[in-house]
Structures are given as structure tokens and as C-alpha cells.
Image (cartoon, rainbow, N blue to C red; front, side, top):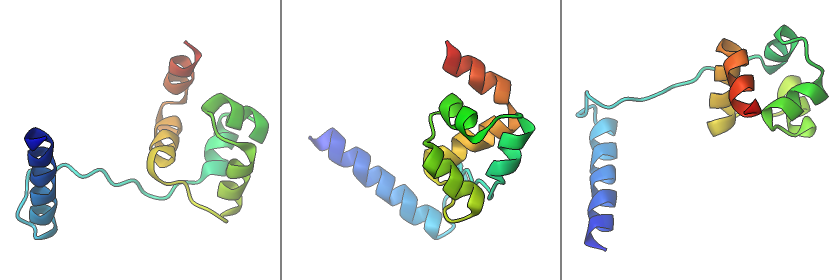
Length: 95
């Protein structure tokens, strides 16, 4: 249990240091807002095709495209990768 505690303590210490600008080696990935409809359109896919290909519900996709909701977390990461390397993602998911 002490290893688990030490790992959590280290993570919290690093988070506090980062928030105080005392951790210059920290790697932080920031993703900007993306145009989900443009990504789908560039792939010439219908909403149903896009949702099925990338494991997204059609309802969620429609909300993103209308701007009612914004993709966050892993979904935002996935969409950023799809925007840059769609064939690589499709190939990885296919097989």
C-alpha cells in the first residue's frame, strides 16, 4: 500500500509544482476546439458512417456538429488524430 500512496503523493506534488510554475519539464497536451462536421465532410462520410467507423453514437455526433456539446477527453484526442491521420486510425480500428 505504501507504493500506491507514494505514487499518489508524487503525482499530487507534481501537480502542485506545475500549478505554481515550478515544474518546467512537465509535458502538457492541449487540444484546441475542432470542427467535427468538417472532419467528417473531408472523409466524405455520412453521419452514420462516421459514427460507426470511429465508435461514436450518431446522437453524440449530431450534438457535436450542431455545437450543443463539445468533444472532451479521449473523444477530443481521437478526433484530433482522425483530422490529421484518418487512414491510420481506420486501419488501426479495422484490424
